Amino acid sequence: MERRLPYAVHFKIWIILAGAAGLILICGAASGSFSLAGLRGFPAHTTILAIVYQVLCLIYLLFMGGRKAFMPWLQYMAMISSLLTFASSAVLLPAAFPAADLFARIGLILVQILVPLMVLADWMFFTLKGRYNVLFPFLGLLPGIWYLVFTDLTHVFQGWPISYPFLDADQKGLPAVIGVCAAIALGLVIAGFFFVRADQALAPRRKRRKPAGKKEKRAGEEEI
Image 1 (tube, helix red, strand yellow):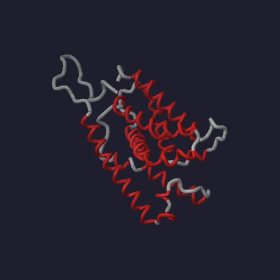
Image 2: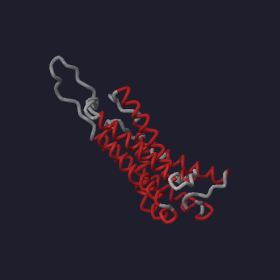
Image 3: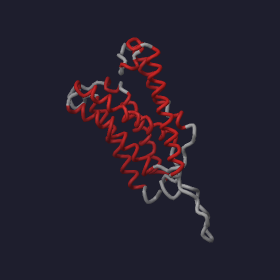
Image 4: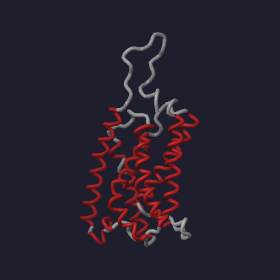
């Protein structure tokens, strides 16, 4: 942990800055037409979740030294939801680009491509391994469930349009919407078990022999 701590701190700061810049740009601040409507999309929600985790983890690293994994369940949810945003960018970006100005397009690239890749790199290089369990793939569904509740409530009570046609039951029909959501959920769970297995495989192993006069460290304490 100690040898990677400075790099982890700097990398997390860059994730926070990239995410915040992306959110500000997609809200139209740079073009003089700031509106919170830019935060209605799923990528904005996953970016906010990633920023919240990185800020909390940054505080933990600076004050506690990062000898133990920090809220691995929250880290996993932030990562898997960001990767869902990245996976869907091939569909979402072409649809959003024509109506966006230059700054908004930069913001979309930040929140849909750069931040998810940085979050994945943060897990690969700066996250203590061996802390995921079989419940995590199902916890990874919570951000998506939250977004469904959010978009339905704002549609019913605020009159906001459904952000994505495939979630609009009035347009596509409830069975079609349920089918799409089930397919996405299944894909997330399958991907989740892959990451659980990878996390366990990358976990540091205990040394077979302890040096005389020294206590054996717990697995994973020597690195972030």
